[in-house]
Length: 410
Image 1: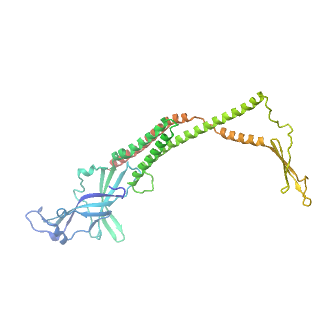
Image 2: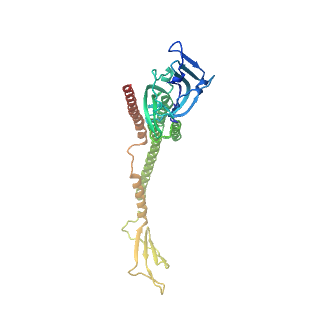
């Protein structure tokens, strides 16, 4: 069975019985028969049987054509042909790789309607070899034969069905996909036990597990058809991918928290140092900085005739005086349109410092980098174990339900 191409291949012995009174002959007993070569088949009338869901088929001719023709005394003709058939099978892969597929082989007359030919299953019906019931990737758990009449635009035709119910074996996928995915997730947890200063080791481990998981997902989907729905294995591999990617993001969070704590400590050291400097200056008899109520000494004003702007510096303060210029004499004089704007340079610097201090203190981590690693050592394994418990419980219940439905049909 090739689920990428949505088909399956089967090697069958196709046997047909019909009665042609024109070929009856006298013999010593009613069970007497005559076996002739396959070349005689082209001289006889044979039903135009074909396989409705056939994609490709070929006959076997080693060492000779695998066809024999047997004619009984009452005119019954028995033809057996060995052929290999590749038939279409529409598969539902939502439960892959714990799915059960139902495929069919359909036999019908190509040109003769029910007015001319009707098909029936023989007494022996359908038989399988022991090797068919125990395939490499599938197990034949049930088969069913039926007869229907199909109607088309050219008439009604007799059709025979045989349904094959095949269950996929899980051994290959457990060894090649599920176990490697679990090991990759477990390896990604090793970074939680590494020192946070070991940046190259932790980053390399996280990136390697993410890329390995991506490769595993790509190789798995490469052998599957491009379907638009989510398969069961996609859910498992997707969660494993999220787990290894979350392990990589966990170290990014550890690095960010470490950097923020270092920045806070540096800011606190600077504040303590700035608070100690005025005390040292006061003890040494240094001149204290001017207060806000002290009258500063004025310096020479700087006049701008072009823009009518006068700026006067007063120690650490700056005063801006807007004046109106006389167009006739070019003299500057204040009037009721003049505006005084004054501000303190120290106030600006203090405001910036307060804004920076507020930005550093607006978010304080509730846990340190070591705490993040410590909690991750337990949170990640517990989450993954819970997911596995839910995933396997749900899927195994679906498998048991499919078995129960199959036994009920039998």
